[in-house]
Length: 468
Image 1 (cartoon, one colour):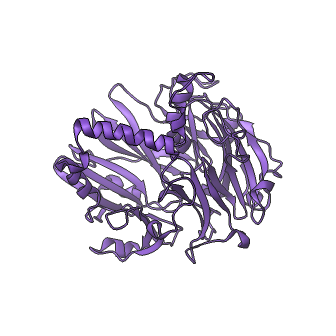
Image 2: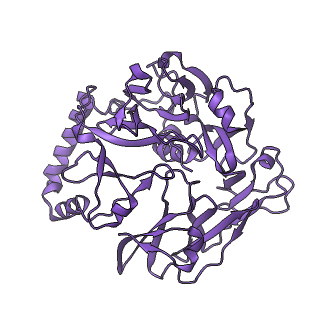
Image 3: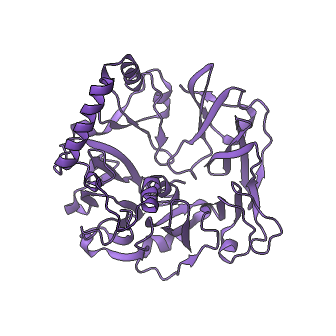
């Protein structure tokens, strides 16, 4: 699963912040500090002056044939729109930009319609049609994504937090949308809304509770030295954010802090806390809940204690049902093990045992070699698909989870033809729903294509359906 406030997204967003934090002393004088207010008049004037100098020296890039060619490609109606389903029986959503929809539209269609030459799209949100921002000098909205309400297998999938940035800065606004009526929910009717742009992490914990981290006081006191959320609060529906209750605080010197909960396979609920200490190091805390506990008890009232996850600080952790999935950045010999696992290894072990620092059932699902590395991974209801780069060629390795253990499936040597690249993506926004995946292929002699795999367990047999 991917969650907006989870560790992988935090790491992506914080790369630049980490570089700045590790190269600039706290008391150092920065002559360009005024540029941090990216929409201020003096910052914009400085940028305009630098642009004018560059154009005078090198020419206007918008007048070149390369620019016009690239713009035509980006605006082409022949681009393959990526889609993802919301809910087990829901529509397929896509965010699209072109020369007509400059800021973009969030739209939806059925899978059958998508397969046709001319899909029938229904617009859910048109950014170009929204009233412009009223803060600073920004005149347009930039899409920063959506966060869904996940209530487990019986969820309605009818709510989303929409994040829009004025002008495209790191700061964004958040508003709750009803996906049935496709309208924003007014705060007077209990809708969650944060109209003031700020660097914010926000996600549902349950239908009536949000976990949010932002500049609550407006003075930076709840932010880290790197400018990201340090304090996480539990915000209840129908209450002002000023009444939100603090549930977690990271250190001022950390890059960021976060807390998130989610439903997983087998009726399990995981809840994590994260301190991103540097770009490459983190400390995790964890507690396991039941769906009923998550639904009925808010984060500030939940009595189940968090425990420190006993892994290396430069390792990353996620889950697959009852299993912990641990990716190593450096060599590691777990307590009680006779084996030292190399950096780049993907490990799995039962999460309850991990929290007891018991590694007797640890298993390596991928181990690197001098010619082989792990590019990425995608999970479905019952499978784990690894994208592996070996001798500069992509291969796919499929593991099936059954009766409490992972077993690798046999693969065809030509599953990925020589000279082609292949990417795997989830069909559903909730990776635990179904076993279907999308395959994206391209190569020197093959234009980009999209294929549909109904059951990823048959992927190694080459059973795919061309879509685009």
